[in-house]
Amino acid sequence: MFRSRYDTVIVGGGHNGLVAAAYLARAGRRVLVLERLDHVGGLAVSARAFPGVDARLSRYSYLVSLLPSKIVSDLGLRLELRRRRYASYTPAGDTGLLVDHGDEARTAASFARVTGGEADLAAWRRFYALTGHVAGRVAPTLLHPLMDRRAMRDLVGEEAWRELFERPIGEVVDERFADDTVRGVVLTDALIGTFADPGDDGLLANRCLLYHVIGDGTGDWNVPVGGMGAVSGGLADAARSAGAEILTGAEALAVDPSSGEVTFRDAGGEHAVRGARVLANVPPAVLARLLGGDGSAPEGSQLKVNMVLSRLPRLRDAEVDPVAAFSGTFHINEGREQLARAYAEASAGRIPALPPAEVYCHSLTDPSILGADLRAAGAQTMTLFGLHMPARLFREDPAGAREAALRATLASVDSVLAEPIGDCLLRAPDGSPCLEVKTPVDLEDEAGLPGGHIFHRDLSWPYGEPGKWGVETAFERVLLCGAGARRGGGVSGIPGHNAAMAVLS
Image (cartoon, rainbow, N blue to C red; front, side):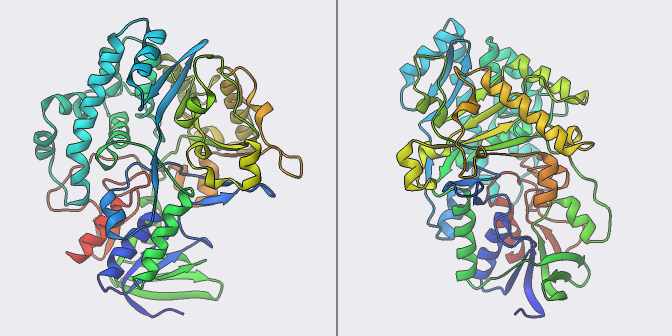
């Protein structure tokens, strides 16, 4: 049952829509959330992906950085985010670069083995001191009305502005670091979910890097205990307990911006409700269609592979325990030159010969996502995120291209290990390997993301017209509260918070 009128109708029950619903309901507003799927959470969900295997995978999004502590506190979320001791490990021949948050001397020794000296370690420390400074300055502004470009420049200072906001990040990294492996580790944060040349003057890679280093003022990427579903589940509980109504299996068909009428379809047929305000927790291209126009689709660029392993694979590097290597981000063929080569191949319409990728094992930090029998047997989850896999590669022959991309990616993984990853895959009761693949086209089909773009569209700078919240549209009654809003992208809740504040102010 639902009313015919609400103070706010929210289209889309992803995590940002749930944040907006919780804030508005707590403020006494009547709120209705319409979700097309049979569950809330969007891409921030946990699932048992393999029949008969008791492992709850974070199937799409998989780590948390941008979610502000203030939102967690405001909404009373019982959410545990665990910091990973190891930031990353990058194989380099028979050794590798280990960045250990808990042991600076070990990190320094690893840099010396890989780079042959101390210069790149000193440059690393200077660069991340700079990004840490920017994180501390910029993160608190994300939950307030926008500041303009000049104010942001004054806030971060001249060096940070020049190096992160004005110059192509590829040039900055090439200038500051000498070693190809180290350059690549830095640049991967500029390319996650973003198909870009880091040397391009359009600075798209800069924007991507910025959002990967400023999360909650630290830039840490943390593991949600219970998986990503714990994030969305907590938000849904907060919204419902505050009085918000959530309808699943309810697909929005049209939005009338003049009246606030939203037409939707569920199992009972078509219905219409009106909201004094309508918050769109959908990609801008989808909102354009709901408003009766045409929305140009962006292009996603990632390959996601979810796996359950019977055991961790062996490394070529005898100095590093696989538990340490796979607890953080494990970089695969992501050197500076390898990234550039893969980008050129994908730009030419070819699946990269040696796809760059990164993996990590959620279960090493949070064993609770595995059933007791799997834990006792030494099983682990493994998530792979592949770069430079734009949707264009999968349009003509989605199934064939998916298989080709998977083969190339697994070969890339094998090239840096001491044994094939396939030998470590757990088998489900029916004998099938515990491995699933998601391309941008799969995300478009399954999750309704145009082009499979995980950020809904290209990321924007975190500044703009002063006094605005970055959620406004051409229609006063309609606000954008999803990842496509300014200061959106990632699992953050920031656009949901800001849309709610725009309504309440």
